[in-house]
Length: 256
Image 1 (tube, rainbow, N blue to C red):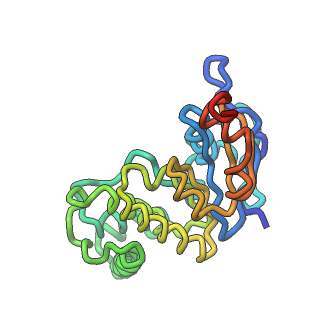
Image 2: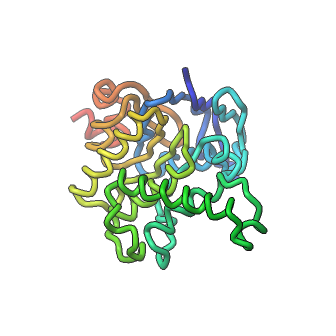
Image 3: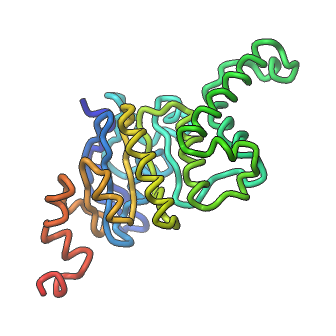
């Protein structure tokens, strides 16, 4: 069963086609990676899928529902969450507080109950804290729970952002370059974490430049070049595809 279906997505800026007629799907428990050279349209595609950009053409289907151009907060309520290439972490808040923030979108209680600190509000707060601590354990940050987020290493901040996204209990998780700026050890931790999340049944859509990471964890790869899909398939077939090799190396070097 395809959980996330991308059907003919396209968008233009000032008459220039940034993404043109891209289609693919992501199933539960599957890791699908979108790769391509700089300027291929990967982040633009992500922004259309996640509701940041309004597509000029095509559809985004989530579990059979047309969610094209639905704003991010409504997509999150339906089970689609994303992280960003540039960290969106509250640096002066603790690691625990950052993670708890991810639970607020799911809360159904009233603001008045929170202001008056009613029993229901206290119960929700305790449940959110317990859930956040469990997520921090899963991403290996439980010992840093009380530290300010700004004191963490870059790789730890990446894992914190994933933990906060997971607080929304997503069915589909979009990861925009989760290993960017990470060293080899941090990348290995991100690798393990993504694999564990996928194994739990979450559908993962990934944009990443680290080809070693992509080839290790992907079930399926979609390749973009100049906004168009030039190849897709399993890692082995994509790595041998002449069009992919030419896109990354240039036609002359690829032929050589």
